[in-house]
Amino acid sequence: MTTESVRRIKTHEPTSYQLTAITHDTHDTRTFRFDLPTDATLDMLPGDYLYIHATINGKSVKRPYTPSSMPGAMGYFDLTVKRYENGLISKYLHDQKAGDKVLMSGPKQGGHWVDGMAKKVGFVAGGTGITPMISIIRWILARNLDAELFLVFANKTEADIIFREEWEQHLRKHQTFHCYHVLEHPPAGWAQGVGRITEEILRRHLPSPGPETVLFLCGPTPMMSPLEASLNGLGYSEQSIILP
Ligand SMILES: Cc1cc2nc3c(=O)[nH]c(=O)nc-3n(C[C@H](O)[C@H](O)[C@H](O)COP(=O)(O)OP(=O)(O)OC[C@H]3O[C@@H](n4cnc5c(N)ncnc54)[C@H](O)[C@@H]3O)c2cc1C
Image 1: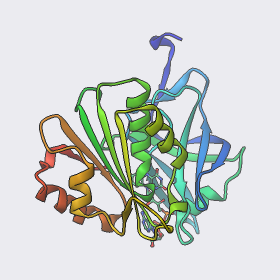
Image 2 (image 1 turned 180 degrees about the vertical axis):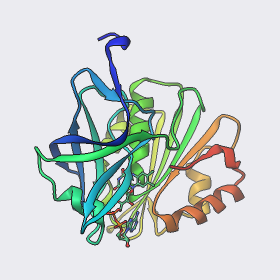
Image 3 (image 1 turned 45 degrees about the vertical axis):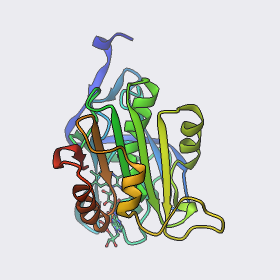
């Protein structure tokens, strides 16, 4: 298909997308696949996001979600969403089944990757903060871009690690991919990080600060400010830290 014949989808108004498949990633996280016309892809760069809209208890609610599928994927896109017991939109989405329709707008511009922006790329993720990063990592590795990747991924337990199998595969296949897991409650014999992400972990497992380095940072709100402060203390400039 030529570039001219590809339709690039972006909408300002909530638009209906059909859910076609649901994959179980972890005990509380699922990947939801949505249908696009076969000649269409989302008009986005890796890291951009969509809003899901719904009316819940008579109120209009919307929340942002970063597609986890590869930007440029034709005919579909994926959202990987963790279910919060008291969460309005995450619970609403987890209650949908294949064939149901969900309203979304966007993509909107998030903290995204642009080809050539750096040769060393660090990713610091907590929980579902991994979703913008999975599409960026998939994109860079699939295109064999000249960039070395360093992922530091924090979770509560081993069972919470999203896309675990894929990280292992990337480690086996790509010498340019490095991954360090940090678990709050590790299993017996765990050889990687324990507790929270510390300055020492960042210093040892991220590329050094410099003109060729960018860092993507995404996680729960309480994790973000202390991490940003640690990264600034380690010498990373504000411009080199990319937020969602
Ligand atoms: C740019 C961007 C992209 C995002 N992409 C994704 C994504 O791809 N996948 C994904 O699962 N989420 C993503 N999020 C988070 C998402 O937008 C929602 O905040 C999340 O799904 C909760 O929404 P909710 O309506 O279910 O919960 P709400 O009704 O907003 O919250 C209910 C309760 O859930 C708890 N809660 C909500 N969010 C969090 C959190 N992040 N950490 C800890 N507790 C929380 C709180 O206790 C809160 O009181 C993204 C956020 C941003 C800003």
